[in-house]
Image 1 (tube, rainbow, N blue to C red):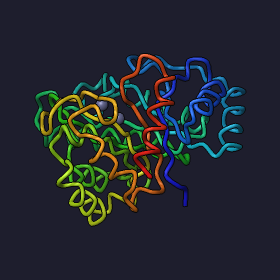
Image 2 (image 1 turned 90 degrees about the vertical axis):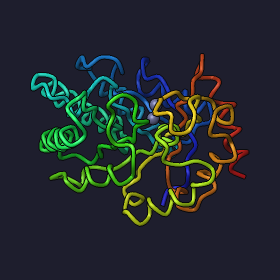
Image 3 (image 1 turned 180 degrees about the vertical axis):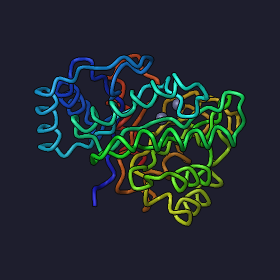
Image 4 (image 1 turned 120 degrees about the horizontal axis):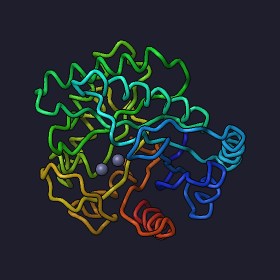
Length: 279
Ligand SMILES: [Zn+2]
Ligand SMILES: [Zn+2]
């Protein structure tokens, strides 16, 4: 089993090999990149030569990569044309993630946009099935829990497990747990950390958990607002967050910072802080 690997989000604008070198410079043991521009769905041309070099470098240094798909897809969209674009884009993201040697491609849960939770959930399952009908590779689609902002679905462990369970392809679906989103969704805090872990274990979620997005929250508990903050400077606090780093159940996972920075270089210091919190 892999050890817990502390890492951060890194730009892939200059290619994968460059991103891996950057990760190494910053002291990351894992990292995350976007499959393409996070605010667009334009198809991306992958430089396979660069990808191959990047993957070799990752293997040499035992670095784990997680990919993140663009934010603007909506797995629950009622509009047929938008659903089609979402499917095409995420299938492509899975192939890019595969070329990059990533363990998974993170996707946000759907937004029901006024159609109601039941409709939104069913539509999300349908879209997931249509995506996964078209992908047979090793990369898992990792559903990320949301803060419940607006009409976002997928706040609780139970809801996420229901979606996976109702899919035709549960074996192709895993999870990415975002500490900030879950806190803002009112799902856990310092007092209820133990209960959260128990729930993850009993529901079977933990076995499918492939990555942790490690973020403090600017917005208060149960505020349903997605506002990341640097570790120890937000409403969750370092005592509560450190529990993830020391808890036995998470010792095999990449733990990736998506905290606000002006420059990636700031992550180097924050990762040192995480190693301190861990020991
Ligand atoms: Zn996240
Ligand atoms: Zn977020």
